[in-house]
Length: 624
Image (cartoon, rainbow, N blue to C red; front, side, top):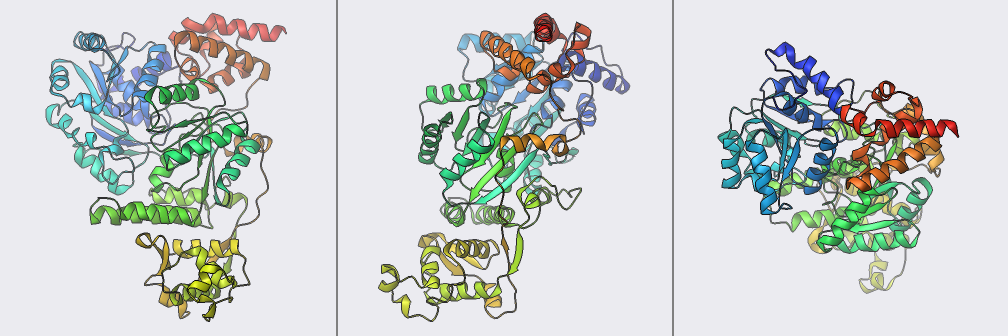
């Protein structure tokens, strides 16, 4: 067998007891979560499957355990070096024989890994897709005893997915060359169209699909109207997340660097990350984010996939993502430890114009553009909804929420009011029509408010009947109306005319009064602080999430010890112990190895390596 702790499996009834034994001895966990048990049983028994499970839901165990339970080595296809490195470090800490095969290895190092594979000395081998598809690697795998193939981040195989990667298409060769080896494809985000393409390309059309709940109840969703986005972000971090680790997403490299600099000037430790930076600086900044506490990384969307840092307390967006899948994937990098976290986004009309322009100017087919526009419309609908954001998010993935209101999103906490905006909608549409459908929001609002600007005078728009008819609203309110009419489909930004607002087929019914327009007015939101976040308590957390921690002094000592160990071993701090495990130790204050072994996250190897040190820290804190 692949792992010395696992007894031979003679029949299916042996699988679950063996799986539970390895789960506890290797990973320090007492039981499965959700569909993990069914998936592990299915794959260990030789079955193929597609797994959709949210970030932090325990996807890795769904292939790591079967790889340990089955004979041979599990091959994990992973798109990012960071993911491979961190997962292998964590597995090695737990006593699992794991290795990577990617471009970071020298020829001699790669050859040594290959020999380990052929000699049956590996439990898990992480391989980049482009490496796996080489004739040399395929020939190597054909000579090895294989337990399974796990295709992680499987949405990358789909052109309809939010992170399509051409090299993933070639992974269809796995089903062709190794049809008898179990295949498990895993992703945290995929709508029905993406799921179908994953199944088709990876030969899983007839395989079962395990779809876990997409709900992340510990994450608070908040979308605010973009006014002065940099200042809004600074206030959000300073008031609610001072000293916390976080990720800020921007669309352009220039904006990444500007935002990181602005946060740094405001006293917030922030680092940039984008493809235009030197590779050494990118690696240095990523390592600081992973290994140090309280670092904020400002990045393009290329950052974060596969990084297991569990204590990211917030994810912020300064630009609109391109789809709900992308938004969900990126926000899912917050709160992987199950503790309260925030997903915050500043959003405005310019975001819609920018995304539509990118779609229109892309080289994709007409079908691709239609799907992309539909995905953008769904995301704009999420941003503009007056209802529960979580319910809207789950509904997109085909999941019916347990309740109409989640109690942990901005709309549930500060419900917006709806008002009949039919008349103001008619005024705006009339203004767009009478000015020739050639102007953007700023000019239309100037006309409606009766502002005699140079541009208004240039085009003689001060002579139109719509000039000055909108003084019942101020500029900010008109911008909200424009944005909502675009979201409702009654106005369309013309990407070829620099965001000029044009009428749509539905505009006529609004203008004639056949279609009423209800608009949202966001309630004033009270400022929330770190103390408010702490008061959320367990009420917003899922069942089984980490509970109250113990002595702050002991937690501080444990984290300081963890940092020293991590530095000496050259691994991220969370690879040594997760925050949840530290909280468990501080809450239980174990005095014996047996009691320490009962803390979730303490397996046999970690007990052997760190048990004496941890008990000494508990004893020292108790004696002070």
